[in-house]
Length: 417
Image (cartoon, rainbow, N blue to C red; front, side, top):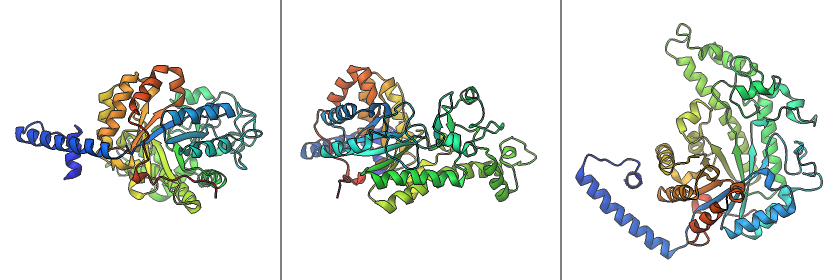
């Protein structure tokens, strides 16, 4: 009853055909809002105020000090800091090479070792943000022979037409609509390697969370790697290429197509499950989260990203849907679709500040509050430097003062023992 009423109040499922229902909703909404105002005056606001920080913003100590000072001044309480961009490490690693564009990192400068104590001293959490499967997006090969694209080209995805991501020209990848070259979720060695990467960071650094990005396929056309095709054939007796060919003779009732969709998504889910298990062995308080496609159906069928299932299973603590839109109402519509499929107290709203006016961004933050989400996360820190008006807008949004993290977020800081 309460959840249904809440959704009606937020404009997701209002019954427009019944005058009495409209009157009842109006009265209850007034009571709800009055109660909310009273609670707001009695206690400080509780919400996630997150900030995505791309890796280019943490390559000098001055940048890091400026970032933490800025986050404190703007009352951010969670930093999602990109530490893995293209199969590299913005931290000290025995498994992954450092970034090619920044030769000092991490050899003579370790961003995470500087950032974490500075943020923790100000009560700000640090969640390590990893690009998971997306591993390279340059026309030239990585110089380091230990980079996975050079050491294990057989680990990368293959398209339905047979395009091998690791070996084809980069233009072929781009023309297929991909940002770059992706690792294959269906190869056990890939899952094991990635799980070790995440575990290494959690063991070496006092991070508060692990944030998974690009934990998906680049599109419907992937992954038809030979290992994946053989395994699916062993389970079903059918090559997945035939399952998606529309050949009514081989699959008249689309049974195998449905099994392929389920199987394909299950490979991604297994990686999330493996990561969750490894991290929680280290410290069960570390939060596992993922940046996900906002439409649950599209995320599942096209990208193999069953994030509502991850929430139900408990292998992630929350998700951050990338509900990027330049329109306030479109953003609300996306939140309604999300609320219909999962618990909003497991969702942090993702806002694309870079594509919005400050006014629209403010409306979107307001929507996350009205719909009862855990809070919001803005993409990205760099956008505030590019457009000073956004910074002024953010200050107005948080003028109510410091926000504590919601109890569902299980707040804590992994301080040094």
